[in-house]
Image 1 (cartoon, rainbow, N blue to C red):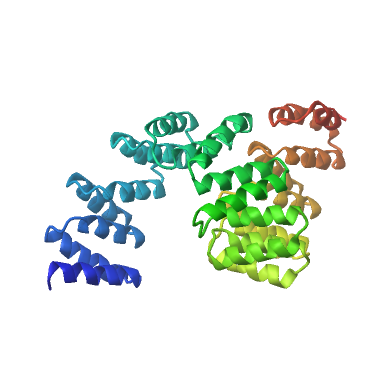
Image 2: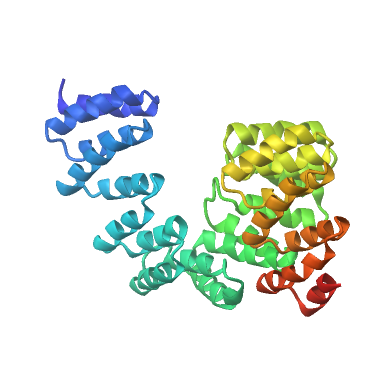
Length: 363
């Protein structure tokens, strides 16, 4: 079999998800010295969950000068909990934007991420203005800086920046302004799979046009937009379409969409299916959702399981949920432990409670 035939067959097997067979052929191509074949071999092993073997192959490919091996090795390191090592590899390769993204998303080192985002912007790396603006928009104290960067990106024709500007306006409670940005972004660029559709649907919903919102949610599901099933499910639940909502929640679970267990658990609890809700909310906690703690606390409180409720309230407060402070305070008062509420005031203050809220909490 010629080298070209070998690669063509390997590529076809990979497209058909016959990853083991594809991996074997890529390995053979690599042994014959075909450029890029070792990286593809490592990629297949990574997808097969053979992390140790994949790492060995990818490191060897990188050492031999295969440039694509760097990103796959970085993905593997992030997946296996070694985000800092992945970021350092990107730094060594002087790839500013990718290094910034890993520091921000996989490691949570915002200071180091910002330094590399700034380098990426200074160098004019594609997408850097939008990504840096999106990063800054996560900080409530830096919304103005974020908007300036996103506007610069939009001026340069970055469709994703329009989507992020629309998101900023949604957060500010201005769906009309959000819709204007989002429609423009969808007009100027192919955003197949973009969350802009979901944001525009939310804007239409807030403006009262539920039919336009429905059409956009349907389009997002058809286009395979991430988290579209769960988002449409929440819309359908709000419209009272319980059966259709549940079908979407279950589709979201099958697709492993973000927040599927949490939002399905919330839906089940609202429909008096509390035992089922607890299972999904506990799974959400295991998956890293801190929002589920308060929901669980309220369920356990209603069942008289004070100790379990208290544990979840404390977890929720530690995760930064101000609403949990007030719910916990209410439980303490109901339990005749009102004298313990004073200790929650500093927590509420730390979480940004207003003077009026603090006064209400103190009683």
